[in-house]
Each structure stands twice: as structure tokens, then as C-alpha cells.
Image (cartoon, rainbow, N blue to C red):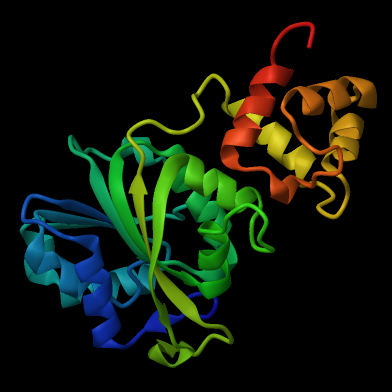
Length: 265
């Protein structure tokens, strides 16, 4: 069943302990666990915190979790929600404090889960076990081959650190790729304000739409404006006309978005 849902179950207690240690748990914490599976992380977290809210899509696994952690479940220290995390309304969680989030995320929906987490505001930090390739994209800097939309979106909302890489041998079934333990700290103030988000992220998609092409050409086509106008903007910013999207920092994209948003520009 785990394989049906795209899940690779973690079986190494040393990795579990490292994830929990990275989460920096305290007795008053409330933890949101995405996809607890068979409960290897859940069991390590429960003794250290006030409550674990676990969202699990698989009914059979929920039954196993309730039996395995009956004491915590009966004390209401463990709440299990049977839902598809991507469809679940996180704002419906009855929690009056910022959550900490822990998860071994299924590879095939990693991007969608991260996007949902970034949009949610009631959390302070998260520790995820992710595909190594995704982890390296998350922390990538301008000019690198891994730098792209995911890098920028993640870094707009969070400080991100790869804690360690994890062998495929610690999972059952074994995935074909390595993983990484990644810590996210949500920024108190995102780098892009809510009133600018729509235009900023639209700009990113236009800029990276054809990654190998010159940025100026991508924007002229996507925005439907003249190259001359964009050339003047680039010159005003002292930018080369031959820049590609991966050459611009987040700060550069913020500046460009602000200029393009000025009426008459």
C-alpha cells in the first residue's frame, strides 16, 4: 500500500533520531506530521511534545497507528486526520500556536507539498526528508545549474539548510535516489509582500519558461512589450542584455518586478 501512495518507509532509527534532533522539539510544541505511515517518526516525537497532529491518507495505516499509539491517542496527545494533505484545509486546524512540521515526503508530490506549506502561515520551522536533487535545488544560488523557480520560491519564504544526505538503503522499498534531511525556518517577513506575490511569481514563470534563452527575449514575448523598453530597464539597472534568468538573484527579480509594476513603465 505504501508503494501505491508513492511512499518509501523509513526504517533506520539513527536517521529518525537525527530528524527529530534537527526539529529542536520542546515540551510545549505541537507537531504537524505529514504522512506518518507506520509511525516510526511519530513514536520518536510523541514523548517530547504536547501534541502530534498527523495527516494520513491511508485508512489501513491509520488503524495501525491508533493501535500502536493507543495511550497517546486516548489522551488526545495524538490526533490523526484521514485526509489527502494536498486537499486538506490547514487553516481548519484548531491550534492557537505556531506549529513545527516533520515529514518523510513522498517524492512524486514534493513540489506540491512544499508549495502548500509555503502558503500556510501558522508554522515556525519544518524538517523534511526529501529527494536529494530537490534539496539541492532548494538551496541553489544564482548562476548554478540547480537554481530556478523552486529555489527562489523557497528562499522567499524560508531559510533553508541541508543537514545531511541519506542513503537509499534506509528505506523500504528502496528508492532509486538518495535523500536529504532539510531544515526550513519560516521568515517572519517574506522577501516578497502579499500584494506583490502574483506579479512576482508570474514574472518568474516567464523568465524561466525557456531557460536557455536570453531573459530579455523571454520577457518581451511573455509580457507582450517591446524589447526597446526592456533594454532601457536593463540598462538602467546596469544589467547585460544577454542575461539569462538563472543569472538574477532574488533581489534582482524583486527590483525588476517593482519596475515593471509601475504604471507607464
